[in-house]
Image 1: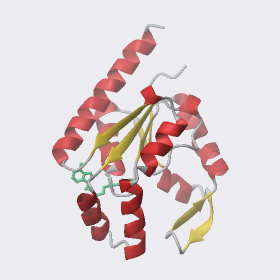
Image 2: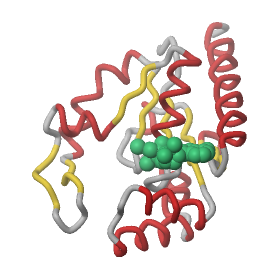
Image 3: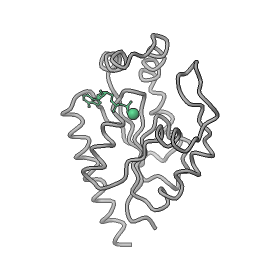
Image 4: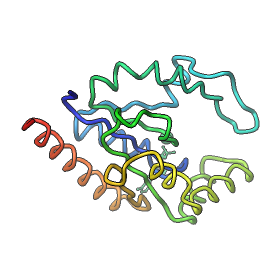
Length: 174
Ligand code: ADP
Ligand code: MG
């Protein structure tokens, strides 16, 4: 039995996953696992894709690399995908969403190439990651939160922090 819950924070690049995870880790004492960092540091990839400007992730290696941490509980997993994690690992999936204009500005600020920028905007508009989360997890595990402004972020963080507290209370009583 885990002492603390495991949370996935997911969404299209630029929605605010890393910003949320860092603050949430500070507020709750849970551990931020940046999958990008793990993929790089532990070489959970089959090389670099010039087309996608990202690592070609070896999912089995990645799952092996984080398995012990996740088994202990209390992880906040930061990644733009969620359906590779076994359902038994995950207590909450937070899908962050933003308006197209806001996402455009954030990705532009990152100097994304036009094709990659458009692909990510389309993905956000089509709710690709929300659908992926809903297909992979039970409905009560998945929450969708907007991340357009810092006020929205603060309210998201309060809400998730309250959820973590409640999870601990519920799981002590068993
Ligand atoms: P991701 O990890 O999903 O790619 P980041 O956390 O790196 O996204 O955020 C992308 C950019 O958007 C950063 O410059 C961050 O400061 C900004 N940002 C993220 N969330 C918000 C928000 N809720 N309100 C305002 N700016 C935000
Ligand atoms: Mg990030």
